[in-house]
Length: 354
Ligand SMILES: Nc1ncnc2c1ncn2[C@@H]1O[C@H](COP(=O)(O)OP(=O)(O)OP(=O)(O)O)[C@@H](O)[C@H]1O
Ligand SMILES: [Mg+2]
Image (cartoon, rainbow, N blue to C red; front, side, top):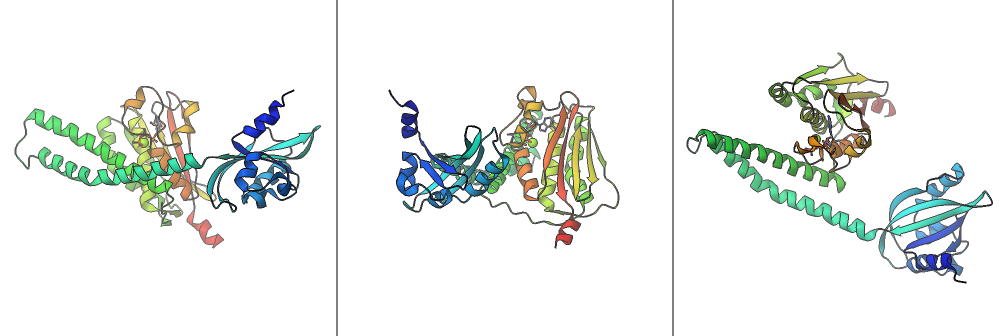
């Protein structure tokens, strides 16, 4: 009779190990032998971290054994250079418990080779970064030219001409923002985001962030309010980047709130943290999108989607907040409004921890 499961294990495109409770190898498949340059006989009884060079396996396996038998496998992405071949691999690592007659006897370690995807992702990142740089310079001169024409510095425009140049000006503005966001994101993704945290007055952050948006709110017939307690403690923040986050949250609120609505920017002080929130009375966000919108290029489907923007603002905001040691989330009800909140560590905590 054909041993189908044996055949499957021979041909599977993942490297597989079964380890005992002490994380030593008891079994490995042919692909694991090939990638790590050992045969099954040599591998048996040796620590799986030693053979694979993947240190991160220890905490994953320990957690797995501590929890007993979790229903979900644990995943992690790791980079490793294989000693035997000198090749650099990126693996998605999954560990799952192995039990016999209800007793946990070890774990199945599964290494999926994602090197190609990883490199493609990186190439895409570099490509975006180069393209946005190349876009920026010509865009600046287009913006300047349009501005000069619009102001009549190169001759009077008729009414139609003014309209056309207004529209071009708006599009240029959108394009500039997109290019800037793409650049910011590629900096974040390449790990070169640089947070210069200093003691900052939170009220000043809010003032600075909403100043440029007041006119926009007025034009749209939306009240833009602030509720900021007096005598606030200082926060540890990068001033410009935090202003950027707040401006984007208020910008979103303006975009997704109809005339007559209200936007309130609040600060609340907790024991260790300070909370900034932006509440709007806009269209709201359906529950299934509430985590997703913090990923890049994710926008809620529906009529609101056609409001311009590329779906980058919240992804960047999340990176900035996380880099500060804070968190960001949204509470929302469709048709009622949304409240975006992010927390920052208080400066005083940093001092105590010294
Ligand atoms: N205050 C809000 N009310 C309702 N929906 C919102 C709100 N803020 C964000 N969203 C939803 O989340 C999506 C992602 O927001 P994000 O700021 O990342 O991108 P964007 O505003 O569409 O584009 P960009 O910020 O790149 O200009 C938006 O497209 C919108 O669908
Ligand atoms: Mg946005």
